[in-house]
Image 1 (tube, rainbow, N blue to C red):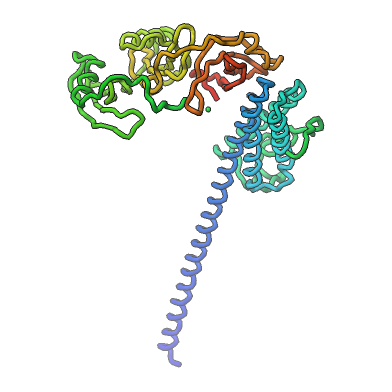
Image 2 (cartoon, rainbow, N blue to C red; image 1 turned 45 degrees about the vertical axis):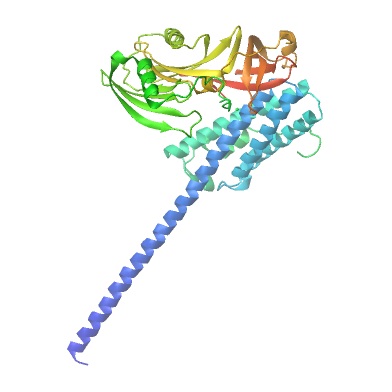
Length: 449
C-alpha cells in the first residue's frame, strides 16, 4: 500500500475518532443534563412536600389551640375533625421526603397519635359527651409539641430556601454532612416523648355574599348616571378627566367602572353599582414618605368619611398597616350590637389622613335593619363551657355570618390561654359555640385564623 493510501486511511480514522469523541461528549452532556433535570425535579418535589408538611402542621397547631378553648361537644366536633384531617395529611406528605424512615419515626408517630387521639375525642363528641379537664390537658400537651414541631420545620424550610441546607445532607445525615444541629430531623425527633397518657377508645372560615343583596337599594341607572355619581363622590372640582372603563355584569355586583384623572394627575379607579348607583370600590395609590397622624386619628377620619358618604353607625373592628397607609374594617352597629356581615373597608393615608381606598361589597350585600331577638342567655351562661384555664372577657353581642348564608346573634368573647389570644362566638339564644378565631398579632396589625 503506497503512502498516499495510508495517509487517506489515517485521515478517515482520525475523522472517525474525532466524531466518536464529539458523540461521546454530546452523550455525556445529555446524560448530565438529564441527571440535573431529574435531580431538580426530585428537589422540587421534596421542597413541595416539606411546604405541605409545614402548612399542615401549622394548621394542626391552630386547630389544637381552638380545641383548648371550650369543652362543649359541638365545638369539639368542628375543631377536632380539622385536627384529625390536618395531622393525617401531614403524615401523607412526610413519607414523601427523601429521608430514611428511622430518621422521622418519632415525628410520624407523634402525628399519628395526634390524629388518633383527636379522632377518639371527635367520636366522644359525636355521642354528645363534652370534653373533660383531663382531655383538655392532653390537648394542651399536643399543642405544645405541635408548636415545637412547627417552629423547627419552618426553620428547616428557611435554611433549605437560603441554601445553608440541602436535601443530600439530609439524606446522608453523616458526621461529614454540612448540617447544623438544629437543621435536621434528629432535633425534631429528640423533642418528642412517649405519649403514654394518651389512651383512646379504638383506633383512631370572609363571610359569604348574600344573593339577596339587601343593601343594594334603588332602581337601575345608566352609565351616564353612574358617571355623575362617581364624579360627585370624588368631587367634580377635583377632576380633570373621567374615562369610562366599561360595564362588568358577571361580578357579584354588576358595576360601571371609571378611571378618573384629578387636577393633580392622580389616577383613581372607581366602580358604581348599576342598581341604585352605590359606591362599590374606589382606590388609588400614591407614595407616602412619612407618617404624621396616629392610627387612632386615621380610624376617626375613616369613620367621619363614611358618615359624610351616608354610611352611619360604623364601628372599627380590625386594622392592617402597610407602606404608610392603614386599612380599617368598619362594621355596621345596630344599637349596641356589631353586625359583622355589613362590612366596609377603608384605606387611609397616614401622612395627611386622606381616604385613598374604599370597598363596600359586604355592606351592599348584607345591610338591613335586623329584628334582634330579646330571648338571650346571660353572660354567665355564655361562658360556662369555656375551659377554666382560659382568661376571658365578654365584649358584647354581635351578629356573625355562617357558611350556610345565615346569620347568628352571638356573645363575642375575647380570651387568652397559654399566650394564645382568641375570639369565640357563643350563640346568644342557646349557648352553643358557633365559631372561634385565633388572633395573630403582627407589627402591622391583628390577623385572624
